[in-house]
Image 1 (cartoon, rainbow, N blue to C red):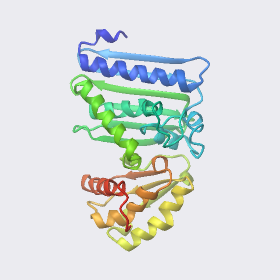
Image 2: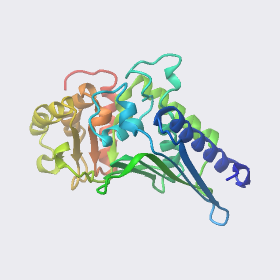
Image 3: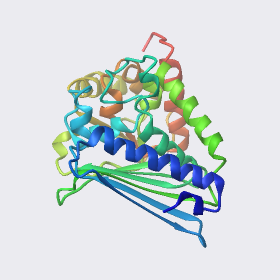
Image 4: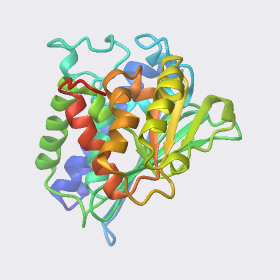
Length: 299
């Protein structure tokens, strides 16, 4: 597809950027002997663009393990790969003049897609993540397990729409601001809000904590935090805090449950997900993250 045939400058910019980043990943990370395959289609009447890039390489986990050997599953690798400043080339936290621009490709594509109310589907081996933006541009996310074995390498599929994409330069500005914030305060953007419990083939790989069971019990929240959440995350096990049925959570309850997790949690980007949050509860979690990042005491 010739990008110049798209009759919208902002849409063309987003498509070109996404294709370049996805193809660069194939060349730099896949180790695929047959290279990769790229396909794209533009529908002028609807303004929809569909893009898919796939390879038959090592998969995301194998490449990420070079810098993050603690990652045990393909799902954890996908979670980590879509965070800013995550690259196989640089160790976690190793920000230098070179690594400042490393590991931003998938994060930028994820943000551009959700901010413009599009969708992004990323798969590697038996793990898949579905990311989309709702009508307000709020990012939504689901994880899946491919029961039939999945894709042997890595593939990415995204949809962008002419009628909802904003000025592309403005989208990139937002992405760069978020990436800069993540460099200073990595835990805040590592918070992983999802729309449901991951559909995994092996539930032993997952610790699910139903928050409704101890809703607004601050003492029990602190106990579960210390006895279940932090030990599981330290061991590298994926934890899901399920807020299903919780209409709203008070700041003191969220603080008791999550402050130490956000401040001290091991591998928070790959091990913690927060499911089925109402809008008000999500805001409470983000508020706790905001003051956890400045190192307040008294959890």
